[in-house]
Length: 306
Image (cartoon, rainbow, N blue to C red; front, side, top):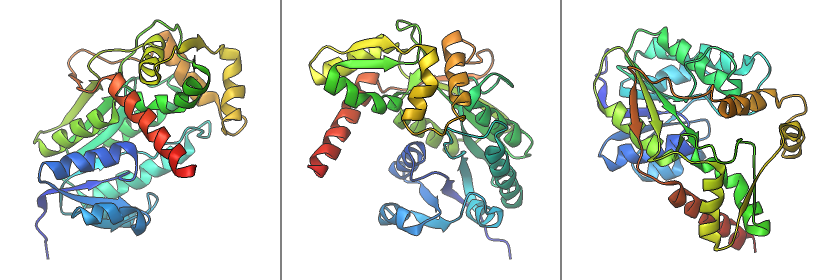
């Protein structure tokens, strides 16, 4: 028996993360229905309370994913964050094999995927290589699909909040300090993906997404200074010290290469938007708003521990 697809139901991967949760929130706000794909039902309790349907599926289980992707109006697809992949990105390649197998079985009418600025390049991307591979894998599928190439996440600044508050310093791997790059808030990413899921199109789309303007490390320090009402000095961390810093923060020894290569790509300008005929969109949320939210969240954590 063929079950008619629910055109206003959208299957969401990574719903417990930053982007997936933003996608789901914007869909629900627009009166759409959400199928939350989780490995652990407990993680979906808040979404169930908002009326979301729950599908239990491990990202390595093609059968469970295919069921989760079936009878929907569209799928939001993504890879889990992996900041210390093996040199050949074996983990991502295995997940992509499972993902594409599930999508071929389910045949959703459209797919929207989280990609990254720079993902059009086949080389010298570091961590973003995983998203180039994602685009390649989805491009081999027959159904309409859209790659949302998001800029540098403004929320990456959460790792700099404590030092800025404690010592009035921002130590940056982005060089030079006055060079502005595209950045975007995850809420703007979620809004754009939700909008794209609701739309109808054919073939392949590429949507480049950045915030209302570009920001430099000096701008980041200024945004932190405004919230803390104190001077915050930006300094450039020498490249020779990156690996040691990343390992001190918990990255496995010998696995820092892809992260360093990605930063090299941003600093050289190699990792940038493709331009040309692809769609280019701007979000609405400025860096200062995101920094204010990050600082408030960090204060909440401190207060809850105290």
